Structures are given as structure tokens and as C-alpha cells.
Length: 313
Image 1 (cartoon, rainbow, N blue to C red):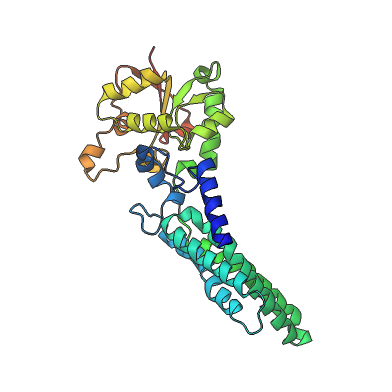
Image 2 (cartoon, rainbow, N blue to C red; image 1 turned 60 degrees about the horizontal axis):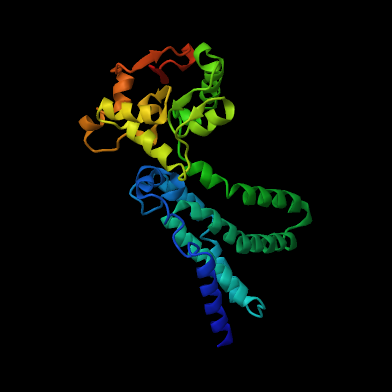
């Protein structure tokens, strides 16, 4: 009775001091940001998500966590065990996080941390069993093989099912280095800082490696930057895009080849291919440039990858 009363008092105390503690971690985020950005972000998707793109990768992670459940149960119900409650608690937490990771992939890390406890315990005992039941002449060889298997058993599934991001510029280190050098050394761009509108995934890099300003960054707290970038890239009318440029004081616009993946979350995902083809980002790439923009030359190393436009004064 005392314990129950104490738990209720603690709950009410936490609720009063930290009202958002018991809510969904995304509860205070704009619904528009969830739809445009978070629902397209790997760690916030899950097995049952409509945008699930890493389903095989999740299987690889679960292959490293699911064995902890039967192992934890077996450890809890061994004869003469003195830590049954602890093992049952660890097993329950592992099951909970494995279930949560099916809904949101970012929970997989917590499931793996919980799984490490019974798995490492089981591995250590299996190692002792091998040591006690292997002849001296073969012990070193068997021990080496066992250690290698334990090390790579957790890495192999990840390598086997990892997604292929070849061709995506945001994963191309050479491209990222080249675009920073270009923005730092170009005659127009190096003298004074410019306010640049481009993919949010280039935003942090440009802030860190160049002296320029950016509009969008991959942070759900930068709501206006994400929305303005999205609405600019997906504008159906040039006037709508121009309004955003004027409101934000944008001076330079950098877009990428659609299939190269530096604007993944700003390309209209409508099932209507003809309508999607008319968005402002695609029209710019095709060369349909409005009067208030001027195409700016890029070095040969970046030709065909990006296009740069200067906003006319």
C-alpha cells in the first residue's frame, strides 16, 4: 500500500514538473513537419510504416536482439538461480523495445543494449564450456574461431542487408568536398556571405565548411526552414517560389539532379507523374528559368550534378 501510494505521488510530481515527459516525443512537433520530413526519415519509420525503406535492415538488427528473449527466460528459470527477478525484468524490457523498434527504428539501439546483457552472459559461459571441453592441442584454434564468430556474427547481418545508397550525392564525400571548395573559392561567392536555399541535408555542411548562410537544416526545430524549402521546391507557380525568395532574402539557389538524392524530401511524391513533373525544382532543372533568376556557371566537376542560380536584385 505504501509503495503504491509513493508511486502515485511520484507520478503526479513528475506530471506537474515535466508535463511533456509522459507524452509522445513528437507530440509538440508540427504535423506538417511529420508529413514532409520525419515520416521520410529512416529512424522515425518502422516495419508498419507506409514509407518503410529499410525493412531488411531491421531484420538484421532484430537478429541480434531476438535471441536475448529465450536466453533471458532460460537464465531466469535455471535451477538454484538467485537473480530470477532481474533476468525476468531484463527480458521484459528487451521484448518491449523489440516491439517498439517495429514501430520506430530509432528504438532498435535500446533493444540492442538490453540484449547485450543476456547475450554476453551466455557467450561467456559458452566460452568456459569450450575451454573445459577442448583438448589442449586444439584449444587455441577453437578459441580463435569462437572469438571471430562472436565478433562478426553481429556485423554480418548488417553488411548483408544494408541498403545501397550508391549515386546519392549526400553520401558522396568527394562531391561534398567539391561543393564546399566551389562555394569558398568562386569569385562571386567567396567575397561576401550569401544566403543559400538548397537541400536541408547540405545545410549543416555549408554552415560548418563555408561562410554562407542557409535556410533549411535537417532539424525538426527548424520548422520554417524545412517548410520554406519544401514549398519552394514543390511550388506549382513561379510566383509562389518568388514570394518565398523575397520573404527570406535568398540570394543563391542550388538544386541537384532529381535522381541524385540531394532533394529527396522536397520532390513531390504524388502518384500523378505529370503533376510531379511540373514542380518548380524540376522546371528549374529543365532550364525553365524565371526572369528573377539567373543561371550561374559551375565547375566541370559539378556539371550534371547541381545547378546554381543567382537571384537578381
